[in-house]
Image (cartoon, rainbow, N blue to C red; front, side, top):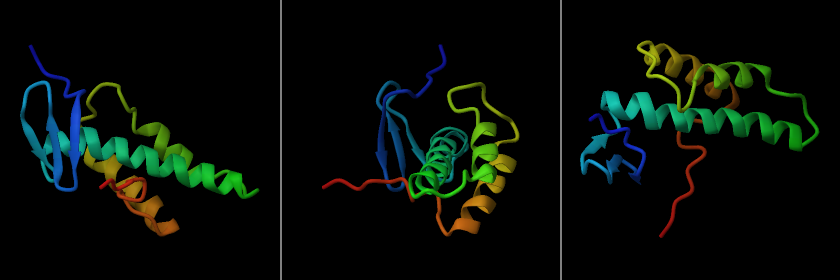
Length: 105
């Protein structure tokens, strides 16, 4: 049985899957192909939402890349290309993969 790593305890340096008790550091394939893609999706979504809330135009570049990320879908073997594409759009707007983080404590 493969673990889907749904119950995650997130840290600044990775996440712990509470189902299988395995830790995935930020530079691991599992982290980059799951948690990082999810974070990128949220940052791109927030870019568009923020623009529209301020009365600005939709950020079509952010929407296009966000929709390619397929969060919750099948593992994309070309996830590094998706990460690079998302990072290019985010750089344009001066944000990064941690822009959607909310620290606690």
